[in-house]
Length: 300
Ligand code: GLU
Image (cartoon, rainbow, N blue to C red; front, side, top):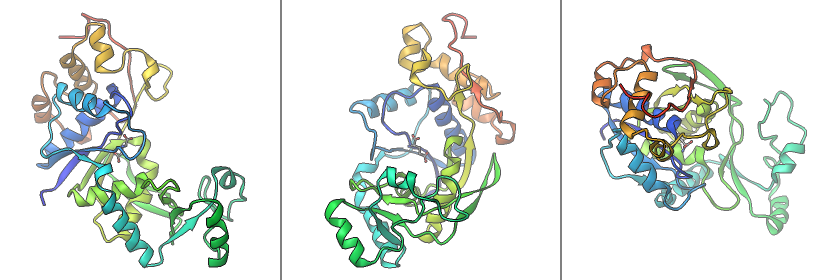
């Protein structure tokens, strides 16, 4: 299988300039290393009808191209079930009946990192599980035998983060993101993961899970997020932030692409031109502050 990079949006709404910048970066990383580029729609959760089509349209509008049919996670639940079954067969999962509230209120295990699952259901007997099953469907958690794991990141260096008994399948039956992403990246031959650095804390869990499943751990590059003028992560409420909003104030998709490329210290005009000048070492390491340009001032 040809090695590949990818962009994996959740179809919850229109992409904003921050998402588009991450997609462009993922494309540049993949293309500059001779990889294919794939698009995966992470629609297990938070999907809004129509959002996928809008996202694909906007990616095309800024010049992002991909090499194979779009993959949707809702079409791959059998693969996720097989991975969970194989972990279960090795005794690496357990049923959890905790509510969010119970987890918050449970005393945390000694030395457990902040926010880690306290392990309440880890040691339930079969008889105790029988009783709990009557009142509440179980989620499936990984029985992790480490509490942290290290990953190498091309931009962030070595990063060690928490691994707890994280959820593999939620109690409503939906596969958890951390499981799906690991299974999909491996199944699609994705060996380079470029995404926003808000996902860096989840990466040790994913790399550990890949290792348990006997899957290769991809290369990682976590890129800085785009923030508003208050330094908070860019959101829809921050004014004109999607291609649709920007078009409405007279700023075309090509102009948005060029603003993004310049913010990366790259020449504008097309992604191909930018590709010729792309070096990961030269990328800005700080969050990029988005200020909606005034129409007519943005081009050139
Ligand atoms: N679907 C995730 C998101 O849109 C990204 C997952 C990933 O890149 O691993 O936040």
